[in-house]
Image 1: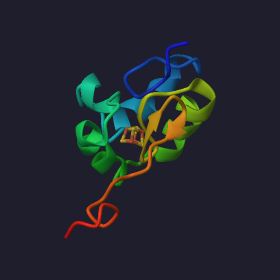
Image 2 (image 1 turned 90 degrees about the horizontal axis):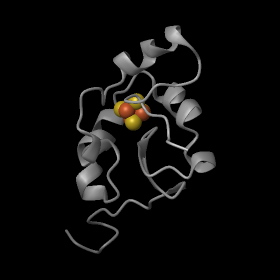
Image 3 (image 1 turned 45 degrees about the vertical axis):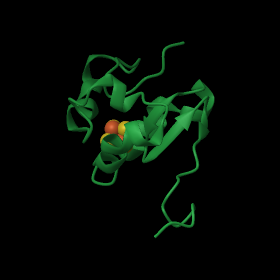
Image 4 (image 1 turned 30 degrees about the vertical axis):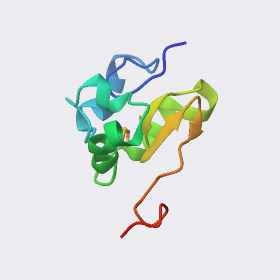
Length: 94
Ligand code: SF4
């Protein structure tokens, strides 16, 4: 099954597109939204922080249930599991 994102149709009918156009990641290239690596997903992850439809995104994509790969609701997902963010502190770098 193809995961649903702001760049895909969902099953709620023709009035359901409002949230996709309101998404902060709207217009970003698929290789960013569906990135598998945190580095590639960074622009989308930053967009999530100011996204007005974060909850709708999470409900529609249902990343854990859909084995989603990409960015949804402020997290990068791989095979439906959230990817642990690697910050400079986690690596012991300053
Ligand atoms: S929460 Fe993130 S991935 Fe979902 S629509 Fe908003 S910006 Fe896009």
